[in-house]
Amino acid sequence: MSAATTATRNDKEGVPLVQARDLAKSFDVSAPWLNRVLERKPRQLLHAVDGVSFDIAQGQTLALVGESGCGKSTVARLLVGLYEPSRGSFAFDGVDAHAAYNSGQARQLRRRIQMIFQDPYASLNPRWIVEDIVAEPLREHGLLRGGAALRERVGQLLASVGLSAQDMPKYPHQFSGGQRQRISIARALATEPEFLVCDEPTSALDVSVQAQVLNIMKDLQRKQGLTYLFISHNLAVVRHVSDQVGVMYLGRLVELAGKHQLFGRPRHPYTRMLLDAIPKMHDTGRARTPVQGEVPNPLNPPTGCAFNPRCPHANERCRVERPQLLAIEGIRVACHAVEEGRI
Image (cartoon, rainbow, N blue to C red; front, side, top):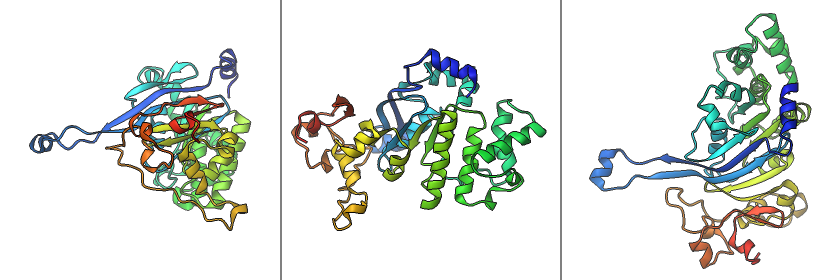
């Protein structure tokens, strides 16, 4: 990180680098207009993200977890400007990021916020050599134009993720999945960002390769002071990389806590259900509790608490009134049963 950036952060000490407030994103999934008229159907909106709020301090990692379709990746795309929010705001280093994305500050902000995508087989251009893939952000942002300095910088970036400058003339198909994801990380680091949004960066990799990539990311965070939003459905991975964990269900945060608090004493019934499903070394003789039920149709979510059809603690209030994310005993949880002391 540059000295100027460090000075700026010191001036704003105490203010989280990333602040999301009431972020929401809805998609219009209605049938074509003529079909709606003939069949007398209303427009349909899919609320992919519905009022998500969190902070991430500089140098920390917030992990978002939840079942497929809960809105984790939509949050990631909102933060990097790939989607416009339907409601809410995202401030980065005290600046309204979505206003900046639509102004002359967009290029500067995109240098500071980068994304690592889920699939290393799809996120790299198969027709480009590694040198051009990693050099693209440097050229795009005008950091280095070409020549020996550019090649030297690409070599340094590859070395920082455990690859070699000798890999520069190769194509992506010549690498394994783990090596491709390292190339993706090197590309994301090219602009010297402060905030990396990681959308399930290890889910497509073998377990042994996952550990290598995660260790590289942890080392880079320690050396460069990087801030991560880490999205995953793998709770073992989350336990390894995170400082804070947010649990999402049908577009909403249901629990937000420090890693040790969440894994040591989960409060929300959904969090407990997810953790009960993980195999544990010392519980080899005990039958694991599978995650009960199915995720409801997001186009027609249940009234009240969205989790109530699957929850063993649901009562009439849970079926009628949607719980708010409240601060309870040092964590934030959206659950009437926890609020009332029933669990």
